[in-house]
Image (cartoon, rainbow, N blue to C red):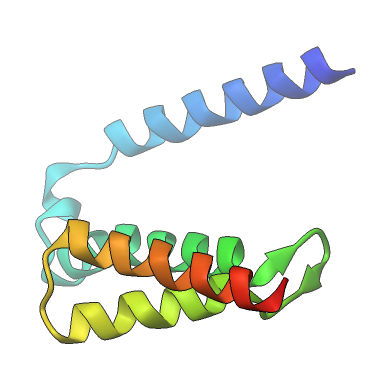
Length: 101
């Protein structure tokens, strides 16, 4: 059963790839399409961050990960370098986990 699901997903991915390659260049040059193509990775990353931060199984949770995300957001607002942003998120998350047990 799992191999069948893997085969279906692989075929679907291949079909999406072929579909993307078959789009005419004139369609891809439209300003609206260019803007949407630039925003899709940002939206995908934001959704992944939200899911990893607030999701646990089928439930929504607010725990130390949310505090780490808030700390990273503050570091970003202060225009900190990427590694500093990651370090702030790690330190805040660890600190909250240490304080809450």
